[in-house]
Every structure is written in structure tokens, then in C-alpha cells.
Amino acid sequence: KDYIQMMRDFEKGLSEAEKLSWAQRQTYLALGNALNGAKFLGFDSCPMEGFSPKDVSKILNLPKNLVPTALCPVGYAADKNKEKLRFSKEEVFEYL
Image 1 (cartoon, rainbow, N blue to C red):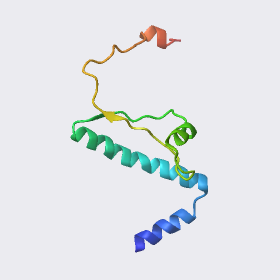
Image 2 (cartoon, rainbow, N blue to C red):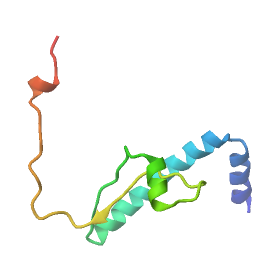
Image 3 (cartoon, one colour):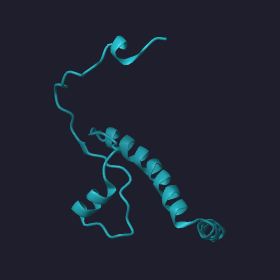
Image 4 (cartoon, helix red, strand yellow):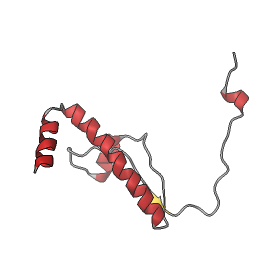
């Protein structure tokens, strides 16, 4: 009971933006466990950011109170990886 009350008091002291930020950071704790669990079960996974939360919400028909924070496809990796594109050091860095 004390913990529940502590969390309620904590939440009351946050603005809506601060609540969202805090919740998004907590998501990564669960995501880390999901990645480890997937690997333990023999699956490959890939955590992703850099997407439009608004578009993902629309595609998944999510209620307004849910904000997509990370995506994590899970499955089996291809048997053969594609060749990785790597730039030379000279193309990336400028030495002064």
C-alpha cells in the first residue's frame, strides 16, 4: 500500500509532458526484457525508433491515450545477411 501511494503522489507532481517522458523511459526497461526473452526463446528482434507515432497510432487504431514509443519486430533473421554499406574513414571524417 505504501508503494502504491508513493507512486500516486509521484504522478501528481508531474505535468502531462513529464508523465509521458517518464513513461516512455520506463518502456525501455520492458523492451530490454522483451529482447532478452525473445533471444532466450530462439528469436531475433530489432528495437526501432525513428518512426511517426501519429502514423503508427493510426495504422494500429490505438486509443488517444497510448503513444507508440518503440517498435520491436520479432522473428528469424535471414540465413544470409546483406552486404553492409560502410564508408571509408576518409569519406566520413575531416582531419583538421
